[in-house]
Length: 318
Image 1 (cartoon, rainbow, N blue to C red):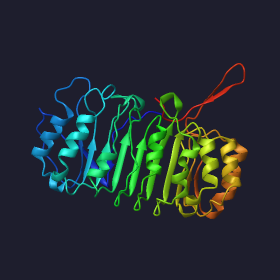
Image 2 (image 1 turned 60 degrees about the vertical axis):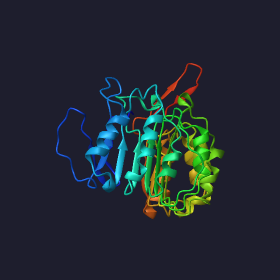
Image 3 (image 1 turned 180 degrees about the vertical axis):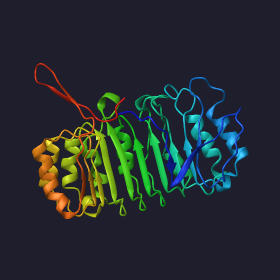
Image 4 (image 1 turned 120 degrees about the horizontal axis):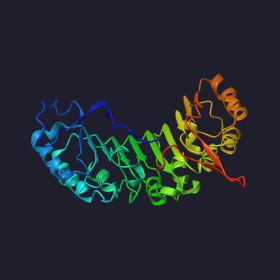
C-alpha cells in the first residue's frame, strides 16, 4: 500500500491548498479550512518558506486553526530545517493554531521512507496550544521527551520509526493525549525499536487520558501484541489498533491469552497473517461483547524461499 492522497481534512476542517505564485483564486475564511502550504519539490518555482511568507501576507494568520505542511524542495534529499525555522519564526502570528501536520507528501511526490525529516519536538514546544500534531517520514526524524499540556492527538507515520523517537514519545508527559498512532515500520527502512521500547507507553503512566492506541505497520507485530496483552494501559482503551503489520497466529494467540479485551469498542487487526481458526476464535471471543473487530487480511502477502524461510511484509514500507 502506498499513500496516494493528500489529507482531506485536519482538526475537522476541510483541507485547502494555498495557491501557487502564479495562481489567482478566491481564498476561504482563515479559520474555515486546514491550510496546506506546499511547493513542487522537483521543478521548484519557490522554496517552501517563500510560499509560507506569501501565505502569511495573504491570509489573516491570527485566525488560522489548522496548518498542513506539504512538500518542500527535494524532500527526498533535504531535511526541512528551513521549514521548521519559518514556522518557529511565525509562532506569534499563529495564536489560534490548534492542529499541525508536518509532511503531507504522497508517493508520487516522494515515497514515505525517502522523506527526510528532522527533530519535530521543537514545534510542539513552540506551539503549546496545539491539540493535534502529525508527521510523516522517518528518515532523520527526531522527537525529544517533552511535556505538552494540550495535545490530544499525536500521529507518526513512517515506513521505519527510529527507536529514539519511540523512546522520546514514551518519555513525554502528555496529560491530555487521547489518541496515539505510531507506524513502527520495518528495519529495511530504519525501524530499530523493540517491544520493550514501548513499555513507557504501555504502562499509561504519562498518558492518563489515552483512549485510542495504534501501534501498527510493524514487522515485530507479534512481539508488540504480546506486550499489549499484559499492558496496564489497555484496560482503559476504547480502541486498540494493531493493524497493517505482520501479525500472525503467535500474536493473535497472545492477545487471546492475555487480559480481556471485551471492554473495547473496536479492535483493528486488518492486514494480518492470522489463520482462519484463530480469526474465528477472536470473533467468538469479542464480537458477542459488542467489540467491532476488523480482520480483513487486506493485501497482506508473504513470500516463501526454497529453504522454507517465510517473508512477511508491512502495509507501508518504502
